[in-house]
Amino acid sequence: MTDSMSYDPSLGVAFVNGAYGPLAEAAVPITDRGFLRSDATYDVTHVWKGRFFRLDDHIERFQASMRGLRMSLPLSSSEMAEILTECVRRTGLRDAYVQMTCTRGVPPAGTRDPRLCQNRFYAFAQPFVWIANEEQRRDGLRMVVSSVQRIPPESLDPRIKNFHWLDLTLGILEAYDNDAIVAVLNDGKGNVTEGAGFNIFAVKDDVITTPDRGVFEGMTRRTVIELAGEAGVTCQVRPLPIEELRDADEIFITSSAGGIMPVTVLDGRIYGNGKPGSVTSRIHDLYWAAHKAGPLCTPVDYEAAQ
Ligand SMILES: Cc1ncc(COP(=O)(O)O)c(C=O)c1O
Image 1 (cartoon, rainbow, N blue to C red):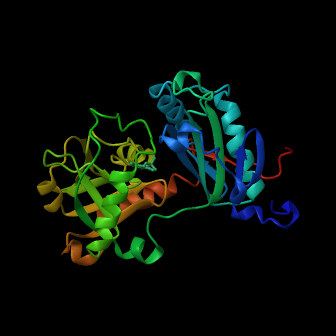
Image 2: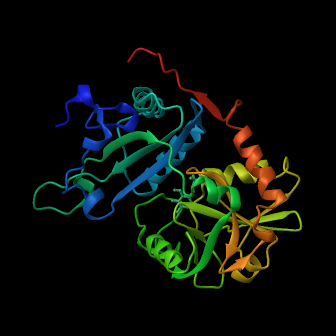
């Protein structure tokens, strides 16, 4: 055990088994089906400049994912919000990545019936995580259309946020093999879906398009759909053929881990002279402006008594 007096809480604080402690020491029993079978769901929200972004929406989505997997916890939405807030408060971080997880739990010895498990809740806050570094966000990311097919929605509803990341991880490795840092997976029918931790948008003639199915309905994607009018563009949510993506004026990806990120190279071809386009930049600015104040923000009271 780390001497808790010597632990720097700004490295991360976790909530496990009803207690707060250093993130580096937080552990899951190896017989938890969350670990053994990826039998878990989770959600990730973030704190920016001391304010949660869409906290209630993230908790609502988390609960919908739990229902989809027939999991339940003896915690109300406000109790979850309080635990997440307490994790952040204890770190003191103004910019944080905040995760809540529900695992199936540990089956009674000698059984494998998921119904017999008591579902477990884990949460943690740690320094903000970015999909891409500062230079990549400024100049745009290099992307490939992966040869890997995303797990089809007929097998697992991707709106349930899940740990089945091997297709996404193989996509990342394919990207690195091809001088890129992100990969968008195909749906086996000639359309793009999403990538590891992000949704995708194509921009063409002031219309932005994002895939309608086979994807996780990201909170950043939802925010972009809501902000489209303000950005002076029309948003279409429908199948996005790979060829249409290739033919786009601009491409961007969206994630809580970085917001709106321009893609300026797709399969080696340069878009917009290698600079983020004007629609992407407008949406980027509106997204971060929505973090400063307004209905989507929940300030963290860092001084509140525990
Ligand atoms: C597969 C997948 N798609 C999309 C996203 C983006 O979702 P959000 O905008 O809520 O971060 C994520 C986030 O982790 C994800 O895992």
